[in-house]
Structures are given as structure tokens and as C-alpha cells.
Length: 153
Image (spheres, rainbow, N blue to C red):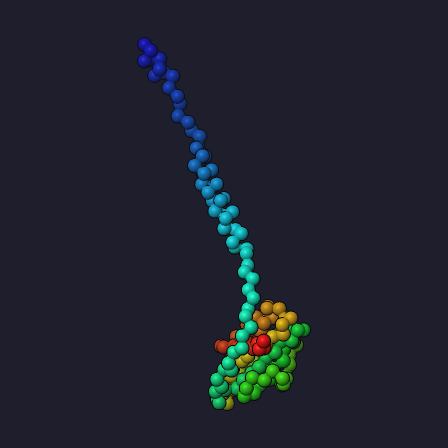
């Protein structure tokens, strides 16, 4: 008789979800995000070395366009047979004006059978975005390679 009594008092199946495994997975993901998040926001401070470099070899069938970016974000350039940072042949107040002028210079050089090497020289107080904007404008003008000019230490 005792066996029959036990059979009548069986427990009903539990219809609730067991959330313990989900909490474990969530805690593991939380730890992973807590460890990796600081690594994503950190930067590395770099002190660039000051080195003297050799002059680039010049091609006789190449014209050199030297673009200078002043501290007030105006653009000056000189077109010649070598890099010249002293003379100022022309200037532009905005990036679109400079891009239009460089497009014309490149087109005239290509019609004359000359390649054009472009070098950018930026003032040390000009922000990185202005120099990158100039490089983007030069890319729109059809310039494939751009050299950056620095001063010797």
C-alpha cells in the first residue's frame, strides 16, 4: 500500500526555464568586454626620430609641384624642376580652389608629356586633418603619389 501512496504523490514537471546557464554565459561575456574595452580606447604615444634623409633622384621628364600649407590653412605652391620651398608661384584660400588649380597643372603637364611629382609641406601648427584633407583633394585631382617634406634636424 505504501508503494501506491508514493505513486500518487509524484511531483509535477517544472515548466519554468532554467536561467542559471544563461547567467553564466552573460558573466563570461561581461568579463571579456571588460578586459577588451580599455584596449580599444588606448593610444600609443610616439616620438618620431629626427633623421637626415637623402634627396630623391630626379627625372628630367618630371615637373615638381611643391604645396605648402600655412598655419592659417591657406595653400601655396610652386611648380618647377626641383623641390622649392622658398618661392610661391600661386596660392589658394580653400581646399576646392587648390584642388582645381592642381587639376589644371596636372592636365597641362600630361598634355606636354611630363609627369608631375607632388610634395606637401605642412606648418607644424597645422592639424593632421588639414594635411589629410589636402592629400584627399590631390587624390581627386588625379595625383597618385604624394611626398611629404620635412626639415632636417
